[in-house]
Amino acid sequence: MRSYRMTKGVERAPHRSLLYALGLTEEDLSRPLVGIVNSHNEIVPGHMHLDKITEAVRAGVLAAGGTPIAFPAIAVCDGLAMGHEGMRYSLITRDLICDSTEAMAMAHAFDGLVMIPNCDKNVPGLLMAAARLNIPTIFCSGGPMLAGRMRDKSRSCLSDMFEAVGAHHAGKMDDAALEDYTANANPTCGSCAGMYTANSMNCLSEAIGMALPGNGTIPAVYSARLRLAKRAGMQVMDLIRNDIKPSNIMTPAAFNNALTVDMALGCSTNTLLHLPAIANEAGVPLTLMDAHAVSARTPTLCKLAPAGDSYIEDLDMAGGVYAVMRELAKKGLLDETVQTVTGKPMGENLAGVVNLDPEVIRPSETPYSQSGGIAVLKGNLAVDGCVVKQSAVVPEMMVHEGPARVFDSEEAVTEAIYNDKIKPGDVVVVRYEGPKGGPGMKEMLAPTAAISGMGLGESVALITDGRFSGATRGAAIGHISPEAMAGGVIALVEEGDLIAIDIPGSKLELKVSDAELAKRCAAWVCPEPKVKHGYLARYAKLVSSADKGAILPK
Image 1: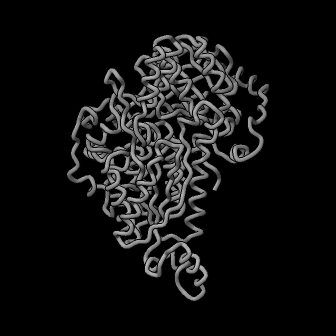
Image 2 (image 1 turned 90 degrees about the vertical axis):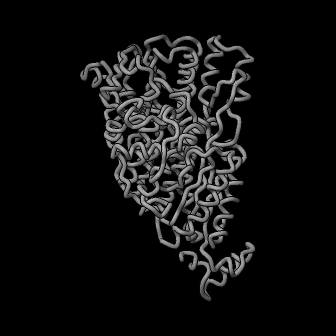
Image 3 (image 1 turned 45 degrees about the horizontal axis):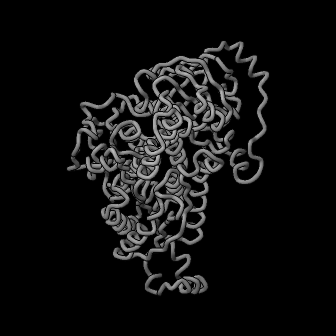
């Protein structure tokens, strides 16, 4: 066992002495040492209960003959970081989480790992670490929040809360109604209740084979979540005994399965930052065009909030991620031979799974659409590509042409929206918010929610080299690559230029001649970095473009 590096032999007596100082016994040290990567903290609603999940995992490891030892991982709440300097620190924590987990796991020679993530960057960061470390590992998330319930009996979640602010600014909602949302939209612990980034990645952890069934959908407050955690603790011992590692699971076929489920579920566009980054650590090539090809052949089977009226708890009641996968398997869209943390191939896991609610999970014969939830667009405005959650775009905005309204920051555009400076037909351009330019590639939920809340969601598009929350809906096109800070064409857009969006045709074009663009390019001067010191400055110097997953060099 790897832990023998600390526990066996005369030369390791000093190590054993320090382990005894922890209260561990000789019997404890004779068993596999299992690291429980515990991302519990007291500032993130999705993580406030993970101490309970950790204790359940610990019980499972002990029951199966292992010695559990917990250590921490950081996590940022994107909702709390939104709209201020803190959002620059969201995406960049993905790499901090990965690197720090590598350091802890390698320094302490664990035989296996149980990862307990929940929110947006915590899940991909730990999946990246699992791929890099290649130690027997299983994931058990903290689970989704229950949907909120308003006084009128309607249900809600975080995206409704942000849109309520826009409605209040537009005079469509009074103070009492806004307070109703504020008090009730997010009623429990857990990752926010829609198909946002956290829930997307927790569901895809199942699809890629790194988590047990139910990981992405069992609500955080259900006792079934604790039972799942105990089973995960027991199952990691089987992975150790059978030497099943992430490299056996996270194969090219498994990533293709994950992309397929991504498109069927209508996941957050952030998955097209995270899956390439995880694949990079696993040594698996994965590009935006791979995602485009998968989307073209994958039907959309779910319309979960913010794209529809169903929530993650509804998906769980309908049979969860495995019920979606079973529908896809019927069409031959999944590789059922891939290995999973259950110790069985995916096909055996799916045997007997039933779609319990065809209103929540459409049968593969009658999907919402014949293509997937995310589209990849290209054109002179995004030579290396950009992404849009097409399942959350209203039909009248699937093809659109309008004048550019250009802003160099999220704050500037949000102020303009609330001051009625954006008009129907406009194409809002927000630039210098990419991985380098942000730096950190801030999410644009505030302006997109403001557009919807102000009643402009069916007539205004927003494009950016930044990114969007999974809570965003509407014609919101992000990850434009190359970004403005790297001299991409988005840096050359001028107020009033016509921009043509054709989502079905996979095109995004700036209607300006090549000669004029060449003239503007010659005159363009790269602006000074917004941040010149600290981790953000180092990150900006090293980070790749969004179409590559905004990864740091190995």
